[in-house]
Image (tube, rainbow, N blue to C red; front, side, top):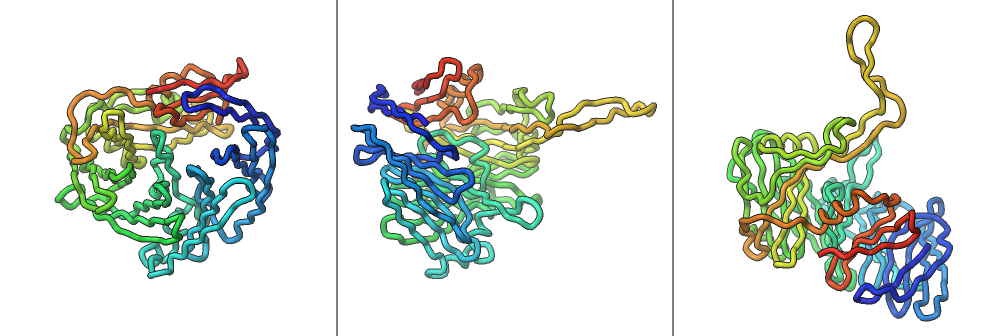
Length: 416
């Protein structure tokens, strides 16, 4: 494992190297002159902190024995001076945060939702039921995403109905399973207090005969929501602090989406032959078919002009067996014969909307490619190993770092 230390102008200061011992890289932080790097071994019930002294280069490996009995892992994220590992109790409405503060320092914060009866607002009174879904048979799997506030959220992350955000000294859990309301749980990591709120939203004034699909996203003090059915598409904007709805947009299937600033584009087709094909859709009902056959997603980022760039999209993960078409006997029928594990890819259909973050009003005009789109265009022709790239913010700019396997070096490119 190599660690590269840069200053605030992205000039390389030092490089460190140590044996990682395998396992999944989770995250880390810098504090008190030390790098704290956290790994999860593949087979051991541990989290390992590799601590590197920046001045001396001394390396200390600190294993934490954590069995997580009766707990389901929800995710992990980096704080400014801590690393957080998050779980939920399977049998009790308890939310757990393992807070690693550097070296051998770690504390477990448990938030009991039976306090003041907050668990009564959850599915069957269970936090785990609220945050999970059936993954096949009778087993349930976590259906939650941890959102990085510094980089543009990808569609496969935004697809989750439950999202977890770190805001100052609190974790905000956004739960989106009902069309007209959002559930919010806030866990204060300093005071160990928990609060529960419901935010109501409305997309249009008419009832819909179809069961709509919906999703939401939090950006600073704004909650963005999307709803879609075969009859129409809506976007609602609510204030996070007050819950007040400040704007809403709705378009029926036969109408044009007048609040969009870009064309509707689709990346990835529905078959192995079109999995890498991109095309433009011209009709609203085409877009709605993509959403209703998959899931709606919505994300937002704030640009340098203090405007909110909202991406409204449809996401679907497609898996097809690998095989070939061949004639069957003398019937003239063409049969698809499968073999192997098959192919899997994402189909993402989307357009972008530009709004004023204060009023929620739509801003007319064209939009420049986002940082995520610039990075995607840049990296398309580069052969990067799996998990061999990262995006982070330094010196107020997005930095795209990747490992050049051929040159055996780390490359960092600044985007704005």
